[in-house]
Length: 605
View (cartoon, rainbow, N blue to C red):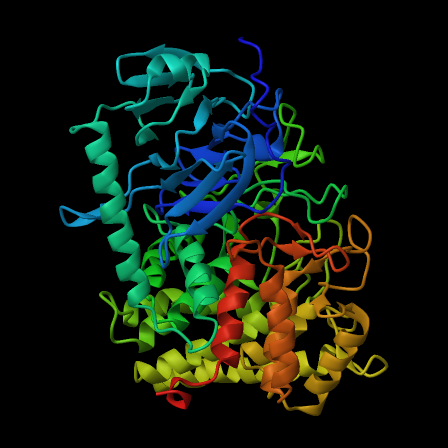
């Protein structure tokens, strides 16, 4: 290894100030200095060939870095209304370059072209900066260095399970030696499958960029946006779209594993799977912007889950290829985010009973029975399949479960689970009416009415003057705010208003809101859970406290990273982001709040 040239700065410290690029097949996270620090291949839940976000055996392992000598400042932004990310690096002499990152996605030959490929294009902006390119993928969670072979315009990184090919018009010798060189012209890097390109590297990269920009601009143009906060909503919507694994229709909860929910807590989980709960909220948020294509993709995946369950227990999450087994193990080769292990692979929650899942299934599919725009509207056969889900909801709504917070050491009859079972029956009654099936409508309405009466009675705690987290319990829990969001209770009901007041008194740190007050498997929660803050915003707006809701929403927008994205949690005192990233649930909150709080279009036009 040649000695370190003094003019190249060490890698930036790990943080969640990251941009994401992707194409509904793969994704990559890129830090403010333009380093790819996380990228799983060949799909979202695959091997993190770039894993510097979770550390490595050496500081430069597991990253794809394009460095400038004597770095002075950086700038990072998306091309407007797209998933194409630009990072500018400037040196102390005022010389600069731009890195354009994207994963190709555009219609071609009657389908979407979305290869497992990352495209990086660099061009000088001013002067002739000296740069160094350091590409160091590793395989098997950082354990195995690749075997490297090369040709005149490519480098192959060969592993036991997969081989990556980098095709480039930069000097192969400089790349292999990590030799600094002057950037005098544009260079292109296409990292993907071990296949040759049909055209030249530069022509292919330019074509892919133009087509990908056009695709995303067209996609964003068709969104039905609220008047206010349009930039925030567009970025959230694109981020949600990038979380769709289009091949199967699954929607992942986040792109990462094991970013701690709070510093040093070991609350480190793998979120690279499809939770039926999170996916429903993603679908509903995009539907509210008239982007119903994601719902249609997701319903392909969801229908397979429902059929596979055979009318019985449905597990709360699956792999993106419908895998039922996601065995959880500890990865001993990566130290973790900022050295805070453990790094977990897989998720034990697939073994849980979480009874809210039945409501999440019916609610996700409900719009398909009422929306005439769809290429494949839902009909009688779909309804009959959903009825089996409803029958399961009736069986389990008052039985103990792990709850939506996935508590691993206790079971209760959780209010939020019973609530979503009610929602399943309520929506089935509405669907039956749309399908002109009065007997079925009556059947499901009776179940819904019985459940609703019992939920309101058994989850109310007179002493706390609030709906609490479980039947007969006394602990406060933010998830009861969903009672208004899914329509169980009128938000202006005095009991709901009292509940919100109790939650604000006991779970809020200023604008931020924690999930619950009781200790869990790891003690009491330390950070605020972003979606709970957004539930609070929604509840405030519904009861007429819109000014407070707007103020809290502005605080949450300010808590986003510089590129407009949120993780799962926010530290109330430091404002720092914690938890897996980018968290779809949090991005859903941005859309829902903007849609609920925005002034109407007819106020300006």
